[in-house]
Length: 162
Ligand code: FES
Image (cartoon, protein in one colour):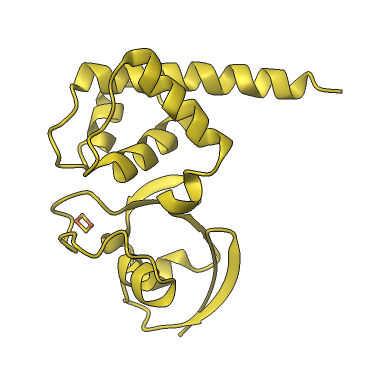
């Protein structure tokens, strides 16, 4: 089937098996090497990407679900201003994901901050997609809260520009 989508800012029409997982599309069709050593079956949580702004495990997203959607990988997200908010939130809380889960966890933080999710249970439920135990849940909640504050301040400043 033909799938129209946008991946990391590129508008694409891909000819694919409709069930092909997004993680494989990124690897085989986009040359992304980031998920090569991951589990491919929702066990590690290390393959998160943003699909229309929502964090999803790319190994669990079939091709037909990205039809007409915008996919952003960590490789692309890391170059955005949104990434600066998250880096500042990590710094301000004094807690960082380990190198193994940094990309995936950062993508999930972005999704929570972008949606301004403040419900602690929801924050922890979303972050539980990543199985790596490197972070303290209280720190994770504080990072989301701090990130939402920073994002709001930046949006206010932007809206005051002439
Ligand atoms: S590759 Fe492990 S959860 Fe997707």
